[in-house]
Image (tube, rainbow, N blue to C red; front, top):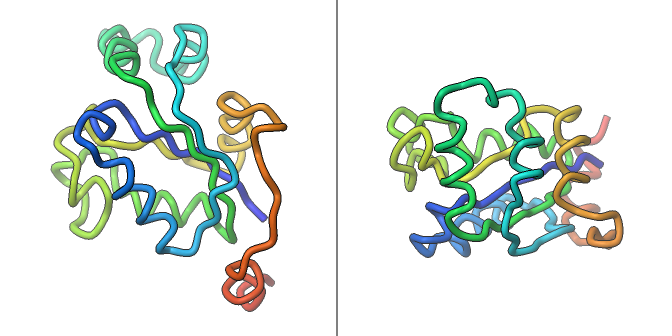
Length: 153
């Protein structure tokens, strides 16, 4: 079963959208296996956004991501990475489709409410960056047997 990382960003925290966003993932049938409120350190941000470190807007991203705590979520499910990306919508919230988190609630490219791993390989790196192994749970849910069992190949 795949796992992925979602960060509920400072703009969503400040606007009181944590429950709304988390609810969308749960309504889809995804299983929450890790959840925590955390302040991001420079070390985590430098690592997480290393692919943007040479961009002129990088300091602004770090300042934004440190403006409030974020909610780190590890979700589990069948094809969870692609499912979460679809639920989130494209990065630019003004262009994101209606019905997606960013399309319905986001305001811009930076204030786009959530970060979601973009591939299984990225998720395998990002989840341990934000969660120690003992912070993640394994449990059987109805979703595992009712929804996913019929979809697995």
